[in-house]
Image 1 (cartoon, rainbow, N blue to C red):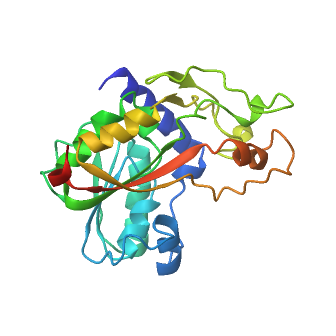
Image 2: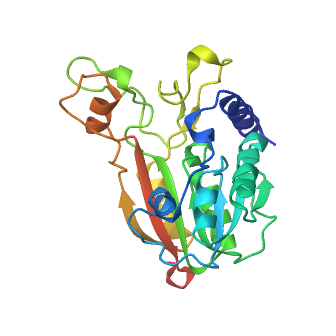
Length: 265
């Protein structure tokens, strides 16, 4: 385990202890709410019997939704505390989950072409090189399978709502691949007044060209890109507030791909 993995593991242990937003298991899902959580545009279609890897996605959220919709789910995460939440939702709903602990940069425990879908919640920016992950996903995904992941907007990562200067949100860091960015969690992530200290997130900038060319180089075809604009953007709200910030600097992207190695250039 390298320094990056050790830091991320310790941080998620602390986040779980703080009951952070992304560590709260979904205990009251039904089919409709499960679909809205993982597939609001109904792009996955019928999930019955499909093999799904929830990659670096512990916490009992996405895994529960996929399983409720009939998928056979494996959840893989670096954090034992997050995986405990997946075990809780499996017990709550009475379905089976395969639960495995490890680093998203090493999927060697899985056979080649094991999965129909790899669903990767926001986490890829916690490692310096996204292409390492893309290579791993390409090995375990079946031809024609779907890889969908959420990542930081390459142009706004490192900019926060506190960076309002009266005229705009200021870019302060170079647009450079691998740029290490240490920033504070948003206020809504956890209750700071009633928990032990949580280490700040350490993220790495992945340029748009590195993301897209890295995917293409591994045989992925880009099927869709979303700026995740359902975060209540409101340009009329108070400058420096979250709703105002996301109206000007959307912080996340969701990229949907299909694995087609036969089209690899």
